[in-house]
Amino acid sequence: MTDDLLQLDGIGRRFGDVVALRDATLTLPPGRIGLLGPNGAGKSTLLKILMGLIPPSEGTGRVLDQTLGGDRDAANNWRLRRLIGFMPEAEALVPGLTGLEYVTLAGELCGMPRRQAQRRAHEVLSYLELEEARYRKVEQYSAGMKQRAKLAQALVHDPPVLLLDEPTSGLDPAGRDALLRLVQELGTDHGKSIILSTHLLADVQSVCERVVIVAGGTIRGQGTVEELCARRDDRYRLRVQGEPARFKDDILGEGVRILGEAATGDWRVQVPPGWSNLAFFKLADVNDVVVRELVQDDETLEELFLRTIAN
Amino acid sequence: MPAQTDTLLRYRPWRGTLRGPLAASWAMARTSFRLLVRRKLFWGLFGLAALIFFFFFYGQYLVVWIQIQTSNQTVLFGGLPVKVANLTKFLDRLNLNGTPHTYGNFIWFEGYIVTIILALAGSVLVGNDFHHGSLPYYLSKPIGRRHYVLGKVLAVGLVINLITTLPAIILYLQAGLLYDWRVYYVDHVRQLVGILGYGLTLTATLGLLLVATAVWVRRTVPMVMVWTGLFVLLRAVAGWLVDGVKLDARWRLIDLWNDLYLVGLWSLGADFSTVRPIPQPEVWEAATVVGGTCVVCWLYLRKRIQAVEVVS
Image (cartoon, rainbow over all chains, first blue to last red; front, side, top):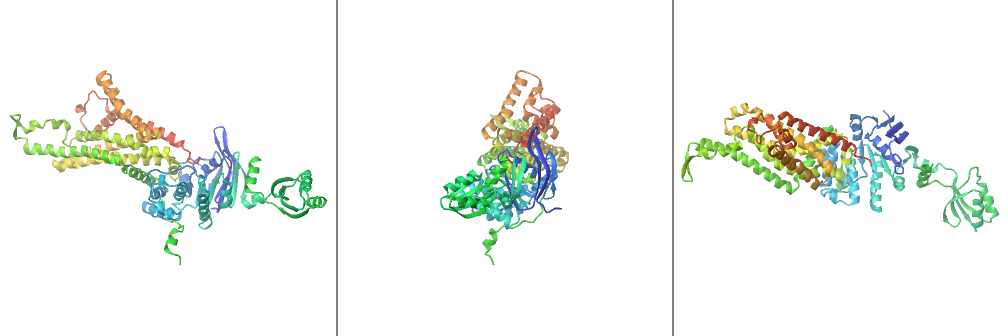
């Protein structure tokens, strides 16, 4: 018995000659986890393995103490799917059913007795602010309501883990914020572990504590957002007072890269290896400018992501 | 203390025992059937099926009444005195007398309604799952593919048995009450088993066939066309080949409804010498075609459902 949400040890998956995922070794504690990666990175393959939909070709792993492997219809895999609420990216609605029937059916598919599934569907739809629309047919829902209905069907049997695949796709900014708030609340207030697979870095940044970056079929990095983004010590926020043009030319001449300019004399810079920050002050003195601010600058998640997949 | 509405809006955990995946199949069947009965068109077709049932129900009653009450009476027919029993001889052809052919014929006639309903129901029951991407919703749940197929076949089975098996059982019970019920129910127990067997054969074959064709074509119009081809065109071709061109009776095997009828009559323990039209293929040949159809449909379904990406 372990407290970890999942433990993967050298998990790989081949489809014929194509290696979709290789040597994925990962241990994640319960919490809110963002799964980031470009198209074709191996994210979907990893999700399928985590849900027991496909067995890994190599390696071993456990999710919530359930062993991974075997055919998708094997008992260990459907026991695993009982512990997971999955919100698919596809529309995945059943036309003709009302919201209440849709969520009730999801509960029954998970094995809940009918009456309990019905009662629970009422509760979950109320919680997700769909109580007014629960007797309307799901195909008449707006995009935001459809996403919340999909979240409701994932949540109905109260699983400890929610696996959300692009939950905010197709939503307007207000709907997106509302859904992300709900997801975050489920994690923080109700103890759900959340694996959020998305292309939208802002979604991960606003909801997740940890990030797993997948690219080219391998796991390129994992850790808390703060850890990963603060890991670089070659970036600074530099603000100078005075005429900065010559100073700028000089630091560029020394191999410093300017990553961004917030205002005149206010830069985000990357220093070359072996650089001593004393050099900033010396060059400032030479060029008659005053260094007002020199602080280590964390990488943004976007920069981290782009750098990781570029590697 | 928080207001009651506030408490209701909060997330509450659920603690309960989850059941096995077979219960999920039943839930799926119930929901699919509910989707079907919400369509007014199906109520119209159910009405037609009920008319056929009432024809047999009151027909059986009428025949017995004529036999008991008026068979020896003479009436004037076209100015000539004729025995009532001779006037009602045409009813013998309909076999409204609680014999295996009564139930066989009843299910045969109801078959027309069943095939129309199923042709129209295919997209509602199954096609939409593929067309609107509902399948990931089902397959991401703790059930296997076979439970999905079972759920859909059960839904089709509910429709079929509501129109064929259930009314046939009512006819059986009625026949027992019209004759000597103690003798009838004991002597004709094979027919009750036969009705259930016929219903099971129809459920398995038509269920798998419907799910497979709906997975293949998905939309209502192509579905109706495929179904018409299977049950109307092939029957006409089979009749033309065997009765017109005088080819071997085995050519009638391409008429699936006829094959199901032969298997059904066998399970009812019927006398095959009175089966029309003649010649007919052997029962085991018909059973092989029916079994083969089920196997092909199952293999096709396995392949198609396996290819569905739950996570895309």
